[in-house]
Length: 311
Length: 77
Image (cartoon, rainbow over all chains, first blue to last red; front, side):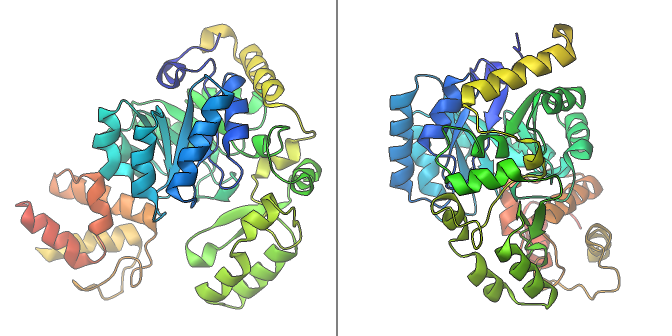
């Protein structure tokens, strides 16, 4: 039985969160993860605020378990989405790309658990001080927007730096990863890529197949020169992007290549020109499974590896 | 005075030898990313014995904006 501070905070069966991936983390996937005993997350990303409200309501029709919303703070709609989660009674918010400080008071008053995604100990400390209930420490093995430190190095350092629970993310896709994260000081895990390839994920079959066929060295990082590094699977787009980057192309030129490219990959299944956001652990994922099987399998394996006394 | 703050900025952002003025923009001129700013604020807190709320970070665009914040909060720099 994996009961700890994270399950207490999330009110879930297991200390396992689904990442708030843009376009991917919609109500079907979130509900499936929550029904499996984890915490499903609706990724607000850059969606209009009212769409997020719809997603929350649709998710609630599919599950009576708790689920959360991920808010990307750089998004112009962030203020509005921050209000909507309160209005709709969402009890967990994870935040990305910035600093949720200014929303903290309203969320706390509404009993929302706030879990910022952090990529450094300094950020974790600042978030703890601002009133965060936990942090997701995300290593650069992750897919999508990343920091610079690996999970293996980041998790124990963040765990030492803060008293609130640390949820590990980046490079975890099985029970071994979960157990390792716990040994490094985490009390929960967040997974993205594994759920992108889940049965209930609405991601186009061609994208899922790229993940399932991916090898350990198949991801690259684009956008380092722009200050917004993104990890995704290699394809023609990344090749072109990296070539332009090496030639010193400016931000606008690079933007042209990736404008709408995540949607292209996720919805249209364009694996040639789309951005196939995925983590380094994609190579470990061998089949499309249901969220229930994924969650149960990972938790069972982790429990066996750790022994019940450690959890 | 300002020298202490500039020394911290130089060390945290690895910009020794770059001219730093009140107008220096952290992102544009000193090439700091968002994680760098967290590090910088932590170092400033330690040096000056203050606590800067995290929501103030987004106002810190230039060296001058930090100086202003410190002055407004009665912190000698």
